[in-house]
Image 1: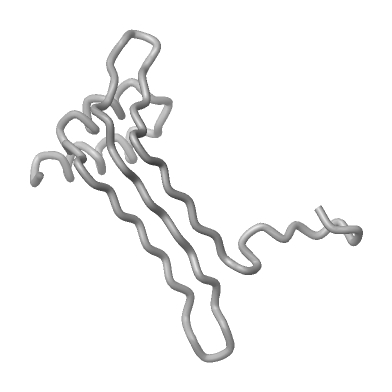
Image 2: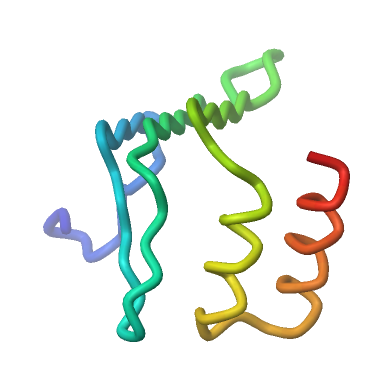
Length: 87
């Protein structure tokens, strides 16, 4: 945090990539290894901000099953379930 105490995260954007990411729940359910990339470029003068999310080798039904075990709101779980059914 800078000296003035104002947070600077996202001021210049960010990027994150997880390679061979395989989270596991306490009851043993794990996702197959996946690659997830996320990036954000903030608003600049006349250009709007840009957000990008990519996932490779992602099984949406397995992801929906995994989400059921997370502490998400019912609305977020329903959103993931709805997406999984369209695959």
